Image (cartoon, rainbow, N blue to C red):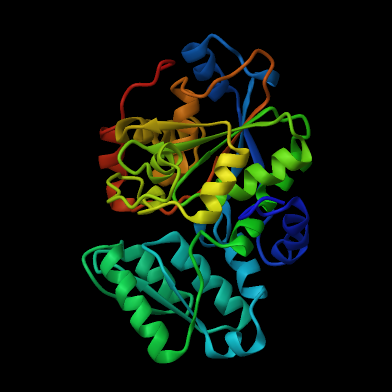
Length: 337
């Protein structure tokens, strides 16, 4: 096994532990989405529908409890007793808070001072201690390291960790259970934990599956890392804060290089168009990060072949309710509209 690659066996080992704690989310479908794809590409997907893995309906509102559940399960007894600390602006923080409460492990979360209030409140609601510090993730990181060292806590990474990646890989196995003949799977990329686990599960189980990632144009740490052959630090700028990792990690970079067929970059108006489509046509509420993969497909940015069965991971639904009108108003037009 190449360095920094999570195996199918590791994903399969994680799956029953993860499944005992989280939802097996449904695989929704949309004929209207397929028609939009046909308008954009000239190709009507197989079955006349697009499938969506509904991780926005997952515990805490995103896919992340899968990986965090398995990470916490991997800890030694003394680590569990002392507690863990993590750094996150949102969904990863909520997931660790929830998974820690479920496992009886104390959780401390360090977030930038300007973190979305609803996500801070969710962490507090799950019983975590929240430390708000710094103007950005870099400043929050320094505070996290200080608190970790003073208290003797175990740092749990929000995405670049083999246990986190293996837990997220359970999504790929569930897609194969529900849609065994899937040809194309599309997922958003922030730090890359989601697409790393999903692509490994899919490719190692069914090598012919093609996997595409989606990044915001100005939050493209993974694309830049692939181009330069090493981890790249960026200052992410996008409404899709859930895809706003300041870097891709060693594990996720290696796995994307190994398993992902291509990455598409989207501007914010197109991401908002995906959100609006989901709400108007599917009656589903996605956060910007959760809508990016669908938006790329609807806009004709994902390479398709005649007869492809296509699934999209709707990765999260933790949208600020007060901003939904703003997001919809800023949406660009889709080809099939």
